[in-house]
Image (cartoon, rainbow, N blue to C red; front, top):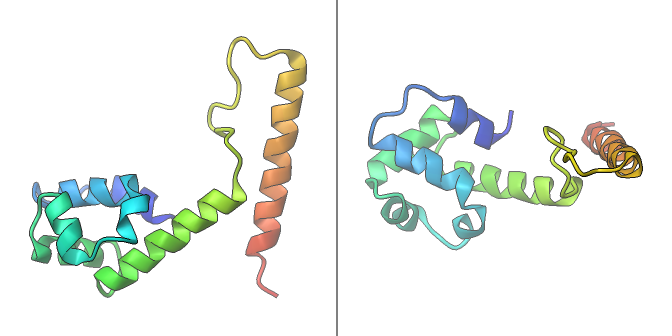
Length: 119
């Protein structure tokens, strides 16, 4: 499961932990540049809250969470197109647009699955 999904599905975050849980997945471009102190300041939480967040998400510490988020962001950027698979079509799409978008989504799904197979 993606770290983004884990942080969205967690219901046991404290009122202090929720801002950090929302900040991290929403700002992947900032995570690489910020250490735990910077993340805590940006999310308006304490260092200990950010460490507890890492633990609640199943990581040994912030460094492990940071690496997972950066790897996840790289993976998502390199494996998927700009077509949202949840809402790929708009009302103005022609039949050709629908066909083309469906083809792109299917090719992306096959390529993604192939990249995840561990020989």
